[in-house]
Image 1 (cartoon, rainbow, N blue to C red):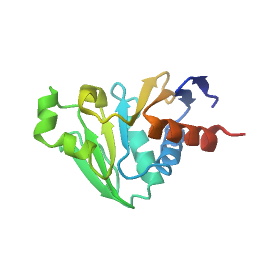
Image 2 (image 1 turned 180 degrees about the vertical axis):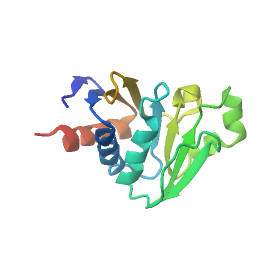
Image 3 (image 1 turned 90 degrees about the vertical axis):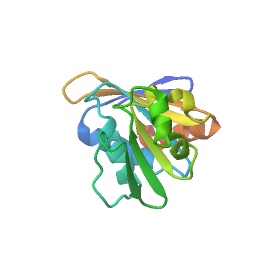
Image 4 (image 1 turned 180 degrees about the horizontal axis):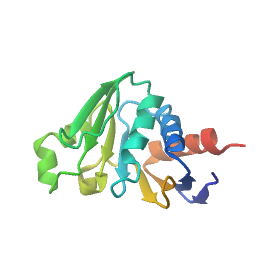
Length: 164
């Protein structure tokens, strides 16, 4: 796994579901209350697997599943963790009707799948995680930080993951 570095982004390949889980866990270890992750990718690219890894890194004791029908699953660790799935939303107004903005601007860690459907209402600082299919188990992962908090987090993630 070798990163392709661009300014303010990290672009690399995950070669398996297990590796995706481990990478998510490493990121989860770095998260703090109030952090927001925006996961973007087609069906089956590993958004939920990445979230499962993040929750593993946050020591979530319960099983992590996609909230496709319930919209939000809440988990507890050192702070509340909100796993949100916007796949079934047809517009931002629907997101506002269930209080998406309250989650995004709250004190928990927020993990949003299909985030591209509501990026207009995201806070100024968040981390985008783009996932792309490149094979049966291989995924291209691009991390894009927005704001100083997430640039720092990305630098910490690079050091903990790719340092030799």
